[in-house]
Length: 263
Image (tube, rainbow, N blue to C red; front, side, top):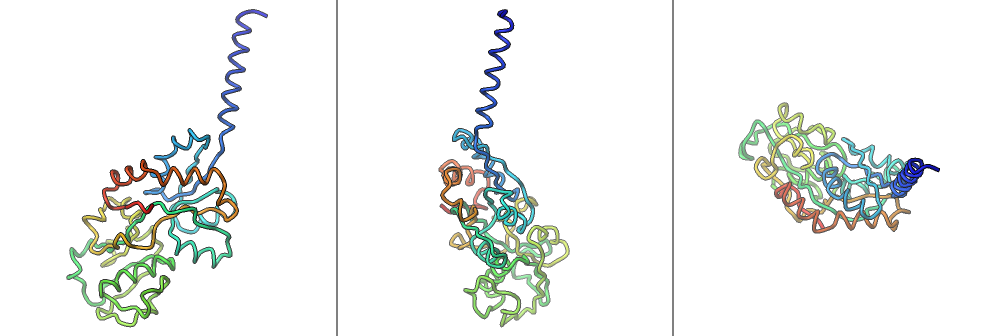
């Protein structure tokens, strides 16, 4: 056996070992909406790699597919929703999904391109709100708390337009998919929008929101997993990384108060 051949053989063995080490990592597939969820996950990807986890981030732009994909085992976890939404969704679809823990809060806000303040709210103005039950109710509660409308039961997280008992301005409500709301700002008078979709448009929740939820809101964004996976080591490692000082510092620096940590 020549020295050259031995060298090639050793190189091949080393490459094979490296390959096996790489493939030996646990692959963790997490579905997320682009901003801020996928950005936060990207921040912890190197940390999980050190723990032997190859984090695969799959982006979604709707609030339905990520839970269905998780239930069908096409994902190992998802990161885009809050507990009221998850509870409603899994009850309606009979899914066995649970929260693995809180990460951050995205305050819901009221925005407009036609008006600069709430004092300009006119009779029969059109207000666009999310069409999913929990965020739709959340939007109406926001307006109720400001005295713009009155709800029959403001503690009902799934309130709808039919639960409005006082609407002195005779506002017209238009329910749309949450991701579409920033795109209709030119066509409606006001829109109640989730912060993650606001940030994508370049609007600032701190500067542009005419009305915004307080930090005591119960709608913290969570990581969801299948019930049977709650105690899996890779899920525990994911949550440890997401609930770290590093992530807290990253969120504070990047989002400048528009998003706040909830752990």
